[in-house]
Length: 52
Image (spheres, rainbow, N blue to C red):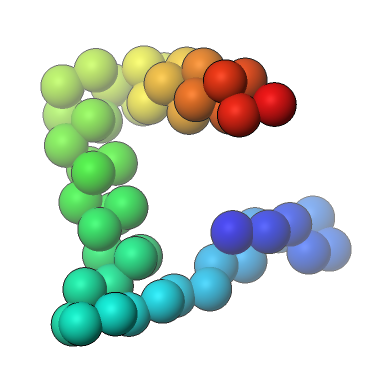
């Protein structure tokens, strides 16, 4: 994922029949169900801080 002209763009990578976009979509869908959209956003922010 990368920002371009104020919008997010996504590259999809498929290896061995496993799609990166599909994997993230499913993970995000499960998180939204369990912790809500705000919980997902906070989870991503926390993960990004760890990588900085």
